[in-house]
Amino acid sequence: MVIYAHLSVTHVFPHLMRASTLGDSAVIVFFVLSGFLITSQLESELVRFGTIRLIRFYLRRIFRLVPALFLMTGFAALLAHYGLVPLSGRDVLRALTYTSDYYDPKYWTLAHLWSLSVEEQFYLIWPIILLLTGITRSKKVAIAAILLCPAMRTFCWYAGVNRDLVFRRFDLVADSLAIGCVLALERDAFRRSAIWKRWKPSTVIVASAFVVVGWSLAHRLWPESEVIGRSFISLAAAFAVGAAAFFPSAAATKFLSWKPLVWVGEISYSLYLWQQMFLVNTPGISKTPLPFPLSVIAAVSLAVLSYYFFESPIRNYGRRLTARKQNGHVDPKDVREPLEPEQIQA
Image 1 (tube, rainbow, N blue to C red):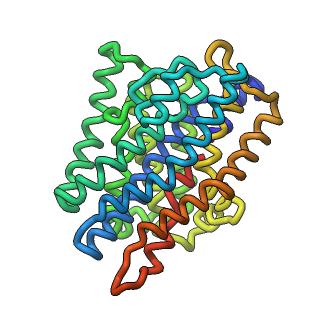
Image 2: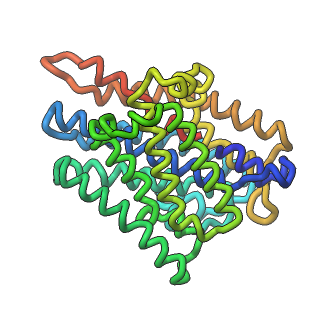
Image 3: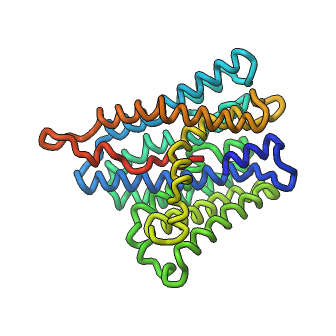
């Protein structure tokens, strides 16, 4: 969805096929998925060990995310030095400090990193809330975010706040993450819901996809609808994620487990990082160093090289470094983590 949206921005597609708003909706879906996966992991550790090893959690996030970001940003700075892409020093600083979500960038080369800033702020805050308040109170905090964020977005939209930032700032988009958190904390109630007596999980997944895509197109025609539309997209994504996670035998779940799609999931954090500077081409604020389709080939190639030869060795080292030892031995489950939420981003 992100790649399709950015190709729309480059005007590669005919006018009727352009759907740049799909990119924003894709990020919303990712936030829900990320909240669900991270909360599932943290809750499992809290129940199993009675605590959350915060330093271990943060180190694993650093080993997983930061090296790839620094590599891509350094490459972008090199291209900018030779005039191949536009980039400012402030854009680089905001990207490397994960504060892009509170800043309207001068150029679009690194503009997509606002979503990673939201993620990092979520990683920083949510484990502490879970650890200090417990599962029940943390659930109340998440529900409060689900209710407050749409109201705050509405106020900021009509109060004159930069309208791009209304849909980027962590304090205004955290409800999507919170919906994923609640889904993880209420998984048993979700499984027992009466909806599954009336609807098949595959039907729910397909219907949710139509809601996400349909509302994305509505945003294009009616921009202010995104103020509340994000909530509907988040709820649709939560139903799709829950159906896929809790009903693995469903036909739609099996399709999502198709090996080519799984492979895309594996490299997609890298692909999300690299695609922006090659695919987004808007006069004055961004330009691609290569024409289409070479731009797509370059983005995918660099993502694959980065994932296999740079990120994976560093991530594996980080896992071994932070593996929990029990009675002098490393727990194998501590080395093999579930699929990272960042791997689904593309």
